[in-house]
Amino acid sequence: MKAVSAREITRRSANRMIAGSLLSGLALPSVTERLAFAEPRPGRLDPASNSFLDEMTRQACLYFYEQADPATGQVLDRANNHTTTGHPDPRFASSIASTGFGLTALCIADSRGYLPSNLIRRRVLSTLQFHFNPMPTEHGFYYHFNDVKTGLPLLNIEVSPIDTAILLCGVLTCRAHFKDPQITDLATKIYNRVDWPWMLNEGKTFALGWLPATGFLTPRWDHYAEMMMMYLLAIGSPTHAIAPTYWKNFSRPRTRFEGFNYIGGHDPLFVHCYSHAWFDFYRKRDTFADYFSNSVTAVRAHKAFCLSLNRGYNDDYWGITASDWMHGYTAWGGPPLMGPVDGTVVPCATAGAMPFLPNECLRVLRSLKDKYGQYAWGRYGPCDAFHPTLAWYDSDVLGIDLGISLLMIENYRSGFVWKTFMQNPEAANAMRLSGFRSY
Image (cartoon, rainbow, N blue to C red; front, side, top):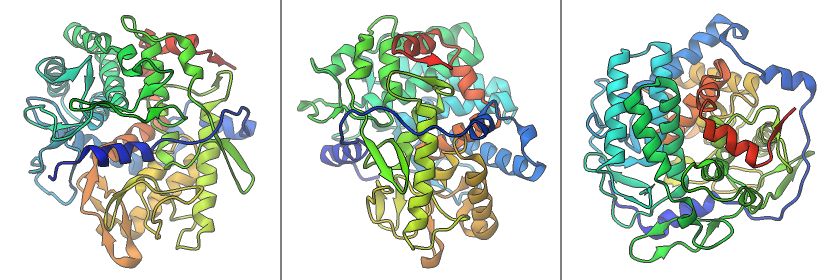
């Protein structure tokens, strides 16, 4: 795999950030809509839909087991979806975020009995052991992309606080799920050694990242995006905490589109999903917002945006977020329009939004499988993106896109990840310190 330059990493990360000013208030869904999201369980699904989602879950869990190095536990950033053998893809770039999703996937696989429990525990333990030592870190933070076998960072790759946060969410999910003394000890040590104040670089918000040759990157995580988990993990740290007041330091801009009004900006849809994969924001709000309801509104606006483009989108075919496209990887979506949106559909956009708009997202996923499954589905589920009119179907799946799909489908079906992760006292305490209250 070609090494990714520091400039490219900065561009990709910057594309995920939002510009705007701090404002408050948002439109809440109706009581009927909110009750539809409470404690989702398989019994609310018809047998065919439940079977369909279970197959997607099983296939995604298979990716995180097969496309991880058995010794290091690191998960490949991407892999070919057309394999029939399950052998590891020959590419060598692992993603620390994919590994975080992968650790959570192992918990899901264990809870659903997809794989033998002894194999899963062994894989989790080897992963935690390697990531505690000898995996390279800086002040406890991990590099974004690494060699899957050695753990050494790829050329010109930054130390990434957001991707470290995703890894930590997976680590803490394992600690809560397995309740194994070795797993608990390693997971706690990995979390507790992260020096969160260092990544602030004497600022009011976190730096975007750090490079060995040049130091901290200039952009900051100073606007609402996927990084809510990062601030909460830092506030809840038992050893290197930042003050709860930092929760107020990132701005919360607003987007308005066709009557929808919500916190968000010029970013792909995934920014409204990632932190929700682990932290349970349902029926909670801080000084500024109910972020779960905010994501509901953001997904509704995104669907309306797609259907307004006159590019082939309809009730059975919509959803765009950062993904592959015919010419590489891009951050695209809207509203407002960003990137070369051309009629391509990205399955993880609707899969990752399942708890927010379940019926409409499920309709899309089942329709995509029924109409294009012969070409778009493979060993690990749907390919990362495809454009049937142009007869283009991505050959790859991406770990982070499969990951958000898997976790949010599981949360919709059972609430498993929310219930498990929130058993960590640091998570609940961080939300309390940040001003969250249930209602």
